[in-house]
Figure 1 (cartoon, one colour):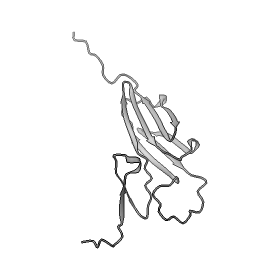
Figure 2 (cartoon, rainbow, N blue to C red):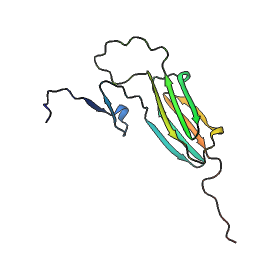
Figure 3 (cartoon, rainbow, N blue to C red):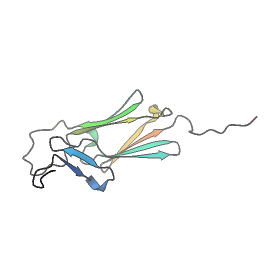
Figure 4 (cartoon, rainbow, N blue to C red):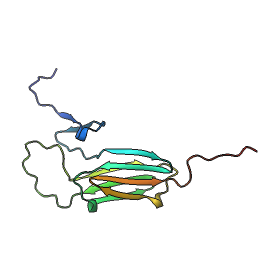
Length: 133
């Protein structure tokens, strides 16, 4: 049984009221941005919450069947003495497995007010009508 005056080794936070719970140890920082994945009529859309990260620091790559979104902060210097430290902009990396019908040549990305939106169209329609002979 833990004494109520002992410090916890981990805390649970809900940044911006997201449903996904982020657990982080006091010795590490949460470096995975929250994502919404939306099924469109002819593809998928991924929206990542990356507030405070400049557009020119975000890198989007497709390697084999994975979409890798990352960012680093090249201007990271000496950290101030935080009283409380729950977020940072040192960087992140998030990997998504692409579906077999993804048209990676037609990927599109946009960035608006801290939300990175990546649109992944399908090569061909997901459902096909089959004529009965």
